[in-house]
Length: 385
Image (cartoon, rainbow, N blue to C red; front, side):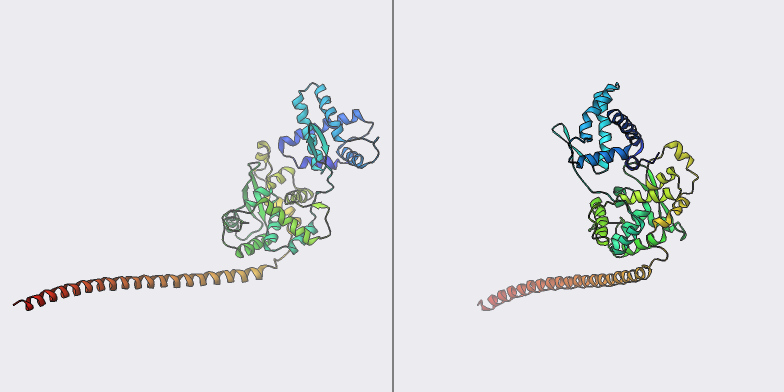
């Protein structure tokens, strides 16, 4: 039997136990559809195709809308001996299948209404990402190249700090790819990240061109990191510049994660190792077996598809120039600061001198006053017979 692509894509986007629940709920839904139709080989591909075709059809007799079947599905699940709330929960998970495939549903006054959306999330191809890097500015190049190699969620990506990467490089003795740990927020597990020399050099070039910050991709003031919207905009903007005629796709940063998973899977990397390399939760039992696995070697299997600049990095000369310029600017800043400090010291000395002169002037005035008083008294004495 052919692979159920629509179902697989949806389930791949779910996590852990929830994915298993989604799989079960959809299996129940296909069982329900089999009872209500005469279709053969009911699966996600067939359900999605019939739903889409019939929704667009002008033939009112041809009907297969999920919103028409939703109430009946809830009743059917309840009839199997479950509670109403559980049946509604099952319905919610199945609704997620249609929403994922850009057939989102809205509940309005208790009724389910289909909203037509033709666009779908775009799955990147290697050549596309290479072209996006070519047209991107320095920040965009660094973000896309690093995003591909890490394959982590956008929220974890934007919050990345430089320190773990720099420490990993210092401890690597110049051996690439360097390896470091990333604590993920949603799963609360450690993702093992790897970076090739091409990406590390590009990051160094980018960091040398902006003010110092703790973050890999800092905000304008350097004290925080860029937003998830900014990361998504990087992908949208570079894709639109690389392919200005393509308007029928939805571009997201998250699809870099899907891209890495696909590259590693096609390279024959084990599913559990892929999870370790992309920040997905692994059961404690399985995680114990992965202790001795060489994750760097696993990453290297897919490194060719994850490295968007092949061979020597053409940015090396530019990196050296920028680094020299940065050192020169810092040296000039130090000289300027020394001069300012010197002027400040001179100003303080001048102020001190003025203060002393003012004190001396005040004292002289007092002495002059005493002399004038004495002269006046002496004059009176002389005038007295």
